[in-house]
Image (cartoon, rainbow, N blue to C red; front, top):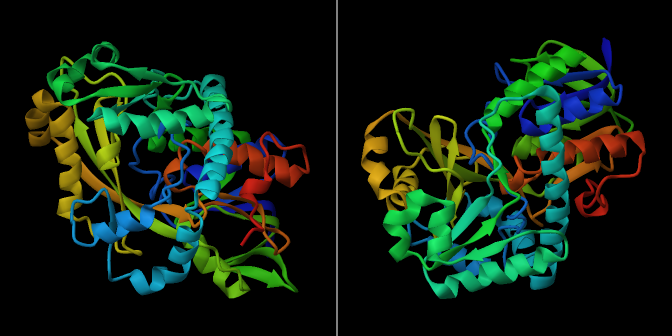
Length: 422
């Protein structure tokens, strides 16, 4: 039986960034993944947005009305499916219980602190290793279709200002100055909120590039190696079992999104994280002379349009559908609709060209905050439950995890993300 210092299960954003951070601190790290390469699941084709400006959980006050209304609306931005409902009830009750104003605001502040730190760490590793992942540092813009809809965004941004969020309300002229490609639809919009510190980039390319850096540093990656179970010796986790062997370790880190539940359940640990399906549409814009210059969010459709090099990525919507991987046409239609509403001059040409629809599962915690740190089972650590902030919080979560494992002072308050809180 072989032995490792640290085994990380999962080679997506959460696993690869954790491997890099732990190796920097001298740990001998092995990463196991069921797929044939890094970032094949949720990190593969996400929105590409690095947005500390969007720290709010999805269980905002009043979310239950949105979910109920979605049952009859196939195009609802947040969609609840009936089929998985029985299995969602225990988690859903926790999700709703955490939608009070006080808990929602506390989660937003905690997420913002982690997201802001994480963006700085992403910038640092990008610069240190000259990573190429279609990165843009031009901010993001959230457009609003009437003056009344500007007010909630103004209030939310104001609440985070003291914590360091920078933002600016734009009128139509200022909005078009920031993104000239919106000139055709400016008359349909009341204005926008601009967040200058946000960035964007292709999460899949970033994960692949960082995995290569980590390999050069000495991290071992074993792909096509699904983990069947954890080795439990008198309540302490001492390794993992794959289909071919048992591997012992001083520390095991689960960075497997919502699938972490499968490995935790036999230990009596019932992680309140469930999959929330998101969709994306990737369009080839290599032949365009004029392109969108920064990510634009349409809050009404719960979606974003992000330029990622020669690709225009339209992503969003939230579908509570259990583990149903069906790529539903009406959900992809929401993304096509958004493209037409924001960039009508581009829509026909882009949609007729090469385009790739995709869906993936965001691991959503019931209280809107990720689980980072050691569990109640000694030797077992978590880095999961980030929901829509997985890309934004990846590097920061890895840094927090590594600090906790080393017993160091943490870069952000760790209690809000404790893996012992369930």
